[in-house]
Length: 483
Image (cartoon, rainbow, N blue to C red; front, side):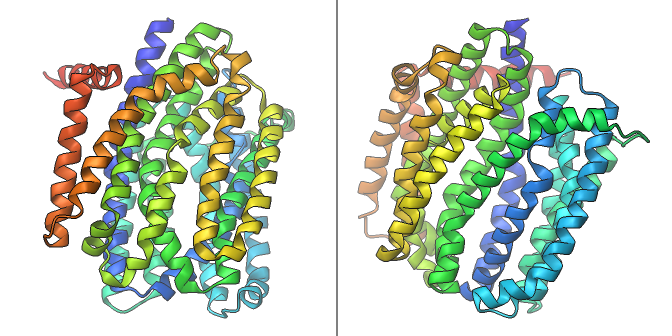
């Protein structure tokens, strides 16, 4: 059973990865088109509104869905109870946003925030439905249906946003993309996945869900507020243009992690929950996912650092060149992110949500001190503070798993060392090529071709087990698809 679960977990990871690459690839292409059509100030306004909505979104999307996944015996009554409670809570939050919007406009000194925030906040009740659907999909590992649903939503909302941008709708094109995506995603999941709430609501079940979920909710709230706080500080202390440069620079590494992180979390958390009483199986699955995750992340982040300038020139045009430094700093900050969230998954799956909350308070407490101390050094100082804090957070997250899994610092860093050295060698070669005197597009293509070839050849030469394992899984999947 343990062997089957490990195979199913990695197989699900690879399929989910392909789903995220496809869906987010379309979304990324749309974002690039919009960046070329719109001004940095317009981007900054919507970015600020999205930050505020994302924080409030946590109240209906975090915690309770995780409770449904973690409980091996959750049924339709549990799912329906969570659905009705989340929907009611979401409308309470929306009403609060509606009436608080003018105060936000005064605080951030931009009256246009009022209508943008009120429209974007409609995402909150829609997300309440969507979060239970996602929990159902993750618990039953229905990743193929999830792929279809998210792809449809991304494509339709992208077409709408680009059409509106060409017609001169400005900030409302970005609003349409953000809101239209979750609407289409929710409707498609409703049709394709087929889950429906039943006419049942249990206060006793809600109490059980709440008992586990409130701690995860608080962790999610702390994590989201802290993660978005840099954008809020930049919006308040600097200009909308600065916020746009910072966010668009971070968009590239964040895009890469938005493929990997939800992929691993949606597959790893339910898998670890099923074997939470078997330390060896949990450790084997965790090691495999850490190795595979970092094998994929290291070359992407180091490669992005090397190609940052020609990439921005080619995709976003010269007006976005100030984003280059934020792109490179963002890659450094995200480098060890797989170790952070994979170790968090282990703590959640072992049922220690209280410990997770304590660790988050520790990490975010130090993070706040570093963040507010960095404001005096400008936007670049604010961005660099994330690098130091992410390194500290990684060390904190690993600490409990020395006991839970008998898998501590030495073992984890040894498991990622080979991929790290190979990626650094690849990055050095790519950076050297940036000095070739060719047009930006030619330099970018040359760097990317060299990086891909070097990393693949190096993986074969060093007999990297994660490269071989990924190829085996892909071959097996292709064989199963053949008639």
